[in-house]
Length: 265
Image 1 (tube, rainbow, N blue to C red):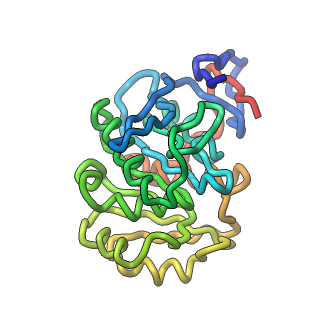
Image 2 (cartoon, rainbow, N blue to C red):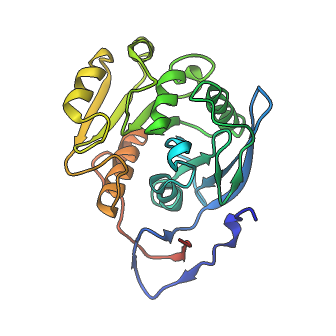
């Protein structure tokens, strides 16, 4: 069965409650489908603030699906649980071609990052058509390759503000793609775990020196998968600071005084 985000059951606690890994805060959530130009249907979810303006839009690109990556990879799941309520940010998550999750399975098959160009374009096009403002790509691991390969070229480049990269391996993305980002002038924030399996902070600083506007941030103690609430919270704070400058230097609350739900495992 396809997971329905309307099935969350919200209850009101007596006073503020800590925000934990499984805490779901109120938002307007809907299952969505994206149509690619090469004929695939991609499944996803859009989470919007319950009220007030959308301050920014995250178009998330998940880790490698052949190694367990999907739209529910934990940092993106927590972004969808928290950021609409805490920061007025819309979070668009989807499964790239051939990828499955509780939401469902996108049609097609994994294409090593090549056919996935159409997936990125479809997600950005959807955000534009829905009138979602201040659009940013957020890539994690394999998702950073997609952001780097396709974010600085049309039709995506003219429809996004920039990108945030989590744990970039720089396997598929080459210096050519970095040079295209440099020429675009678009902001690029790169969060690199100290103990990353593929690219660590010092090497990342050297590789991304080709992009003068790139901000490379090494995160002490972190690993490629950002496991642990400490590191997930750090990532979300850095993303919000980049896409919503009025919140720079202001950490996201760790408690919520309002209705909450609890997500399943």
